[in-house]
Amino acid sequence: MPQHITTNLNRDIARDIARIYCTLSLMGVEALAKLLVPLKFAKGSVVLEEGEVCRAMYYVSRGMVRQYYYKNQKDVTEHFSYEGKICFCIESFLKQEPSRIIVEALEPTTLYAIPYEALHVAMMQNNEIELLYRKILEHALISSQAHADSQRFENARERYERLLRTYPEIVLRAPMLHIASFLQMTPETLSRVRSAFNKESVNRKAAEGDREQPV
Image (cartoon, rainbow, N blue to C red; front, side):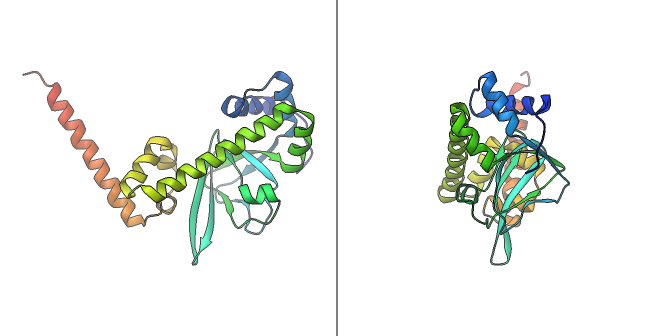
């Protein structure tokens, strides 16, 4: 990662991360700000190649990224991250081994990298950074488990409704092909599920409107 100077923008991003994941003191914010490395990616750019070691966590300041892998010559979407989320390939990051996961920018994207080595040095010097790291890991693991449980125990309609309820930005911004892959269904199935859901929503609103009409 390139060397950089701590800026007020870095401090603003550090405060944003602290608000989302773990409250930090002024000293904690300053320590985190010193770690952040701003990176910009054009739409379609690869953030992390297959076989590359994930050497940083990436906070998404602007845009959206997708994590995916190849299985039977098809790409399978594993995760989406957008503003306010942190993206990293957990196994590769923790083990510092090559990743089978690819990360690409779905939109023009600004990321703030938290480099692995600098982070671990900071954790030895600052307990707040260590706590922040633990909270980020907890969040990532819980999110991963929730998605895995959804795939195991919910049908296609329930999976789509959960995504719409918990992460509406994904439905609004990500390509439907990638959303279908993320939900482990074909694009045709997703199209049918969305059509049925939208039709029921329209009928429900119409019925509610009829009930509100004066007698």
